Image (cartoon, rainbow, N blue to C red; front, top):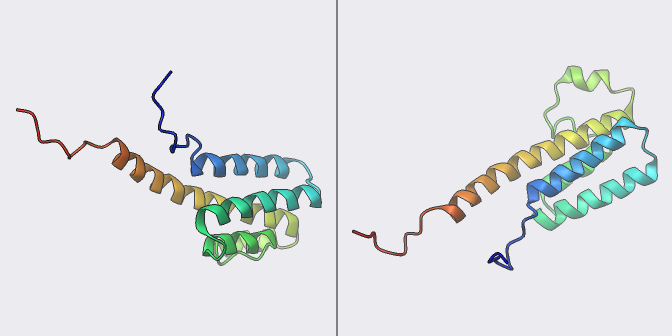
Length: 129
């Protein structure tokens, strides 16, 4: 049996967010109903709230994206805004995806730095020699 640190969770924030992005993609490929989207949004908001806190700007950006009103928060070019302006459900899905991809990018950067620190050289012992 491997020696495992019980406080370490192999499920990373990036993994959790990637799973949400995959769910969002599957909802986008078929016409999701309002109940499915509401459930997805609740799961995603709970995940973001757990990692960042209930008043974080990323959670707020996600909530705006669910209403298709996050253009300035996700830095969408105007041409992209105009093309999908007539299809609010599609626009809201696109904005959800952009917000989640941005947050996942942040997670990947942070987790990469955390892994470097955790797997780095142990500086407590003097060098052998």
